Amino acid sequence: MDAPLLPGQLLARGVCRHLVAQGLACLTEFVPTRGMRVDVMALDRRGRIWIVECKSSRADFQSDRKWAGYLDWCDRYFWAVDTAFPDHLLPSGTGINRAEAYDAEFVVDAPETPRNAARRKALTLRFARAGALRTARLLDPGLAAVEA
Image 1 (tube, one colour):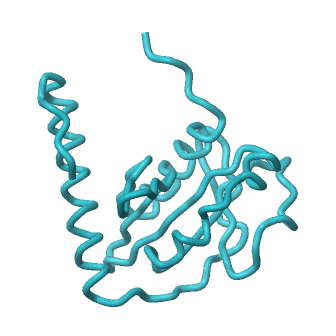
Image 2 (tube, rainbow, N blue to C red; image 1 turned 90 degrees about the vertical axis):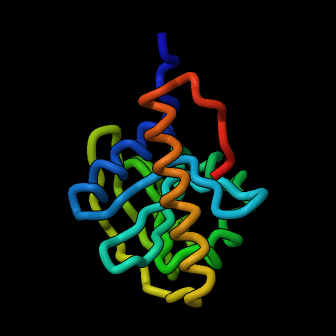
């Protein structure tokens, strides 16, 4: 039996449901580069890259020292928090999603900061490979874990 989802994973599920309904493709627990793992990365129809970091509590947010490094890897950056989260803690210049396990909504839109074409292409290819490999492993759990 699968372990129950943790609070941040429940937020990520709601965010992904919302983004997919808006036409974006999502991956959770995505590694854009060695040493980084984002909660949700999404690709919109125009090829823009979005990152959403899910914070289940004030303590979860305050212990996160790596989020600013993610800004170089996306065109738009959002936080996903629940209704009890104190929004005033979140940095300006980033978007906010109010999320729960089954849906989310944009409360503050994130500004667009376009990445250079070479980085976007490399990241888009990594995203596509990761998605395809995850699908292949769902269809055949016996496949060896292959680095995307």
